Image (cartoon, rainbow, N blue to C red):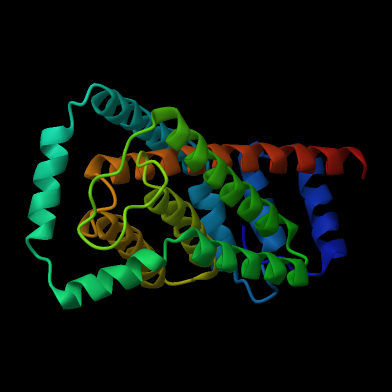
Length: 269
């Protein structure tokens, strides 16, 4: 899902010629997806990396989503049966031992990066950017991912009706507690951005750095919710699990949509 070049005629011809070949491998479809969305400056190494790594992406995504699904189911059962109270209170107590004015200021800032208004503003900015670039692939994935994440967060909160803990700092939020919307939304948004940036980078250390920064930010946002006392630790864990499930579903849906698009194009050329 790299940035789309405006040379659509060249991309279409290349796509049609590759699909028409008798030895065409369906697993090469993602190469066409990525290469058709890359800027003219994208090099052969990036294309080769897409060919080499993509066949494992769907199984890995499904595997992670499956693990996350079982984890979410287990957490849900523990929450409904009130079996997580001892764990939640113990973790809250340990985290709060490190409270100080400076740490509180840092975590207040970090938690704001996962607030819906901030994420929504960033999402709208990216939407306008992709519209300007005529990048429908990125635009579609971004909109579906974030809209789905918002709906999922709201539905799950209403379904479980878990009350918030008493916060350590500030007022108690008015919404329900399970799962943490901050952890769910931050993993979806910052994880998606990291994935988009990853494919544009040539050096392995650059890609590792991007994912480390994204992972650190996502983790700190979740930790900030526990530190501030506005979520139980199991809320945060469930938010991450729900986000992984949703991101896995988006990955599979994007793969299917792109495959159908490529086949339709082959039939009309």
